[in-house]
Image 1 (cartoon, helix red, strand yellow):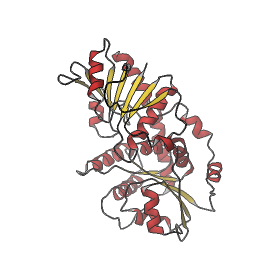
Image 2 (cartoon, one colour):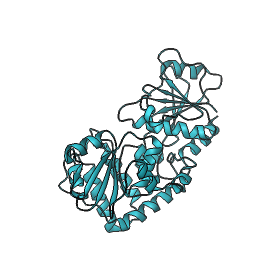
Image 3 (cartoon, helix red, strand yellow):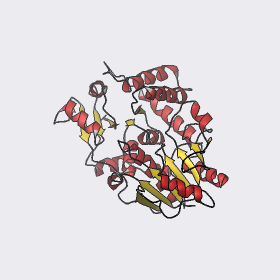
Image 4 (cartoon, one colour):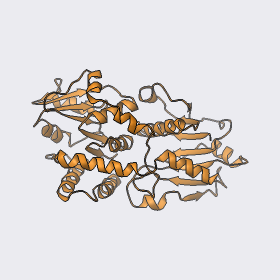
Length: 353
């Protein structure tokens, strides 16, 4: 089938990151994909080699492109151009129109997943749009997961990867990756990390800017040393997560990749003015920690709440890794038992066609 995937880049490259992973994964399964995007500049460093089967095209500015695909994905409610909607409505066999929603562990996701939205007015009148929700349970659309992900991770060697970055782990040094938005709790985290030998690998952007301001040009405080990483490809970012002992991630794409890494991680949700992101954090913790040891669960919940608060944190306490590591692996295994997003999309479109 031919897939048309429409993406608008809002900010922080999260939308394009998710859309590119999905497009590349569908193409790897033999499905040609046209990725229509209003700002493809991030793909120059995120996916410099492109992907076989994926054609990147500019957002349609006037007339609709020649011929619509068998499936049309509207990523994150980006609203399709009217010309595209008219073309879809006029097709002898209209495509399956899917609104790919943001990831959430909230209970409503299971209820809303795969629900139809008949279009009665406008250029798309007569069409039906379907809501597709990624998620963490069998009653959702699952998570993006490439079929070769586990093989790549098993073949990965952290020491070799660090050497390629010009780095090496020192004796008893913990490796921490940091990918964040503006983070009021970062001073407290740096103070905590400086209590033992730590190598902090800061992703380019907000993380490197804030770490540099707090640690100064030497990027060091006691036994804590930090490194400002260059922009990484998506596969390079996966490898960063695999090389680290603890990962601080943000948004949606890195949140999912941290879970596939199976390492201890802390998530910073994209802040919303009405505080809706805090409900997303609590919903995920409720699900992820449902079977966790109570003392560990209490400590991790406190850490995540401090990391997602809007005010500076007085202190940050990291749970003991003895419980954290095995918990992350058990959680990953539970997700691996569920069908991934591409697998479910292929089945869903086949049903609706």
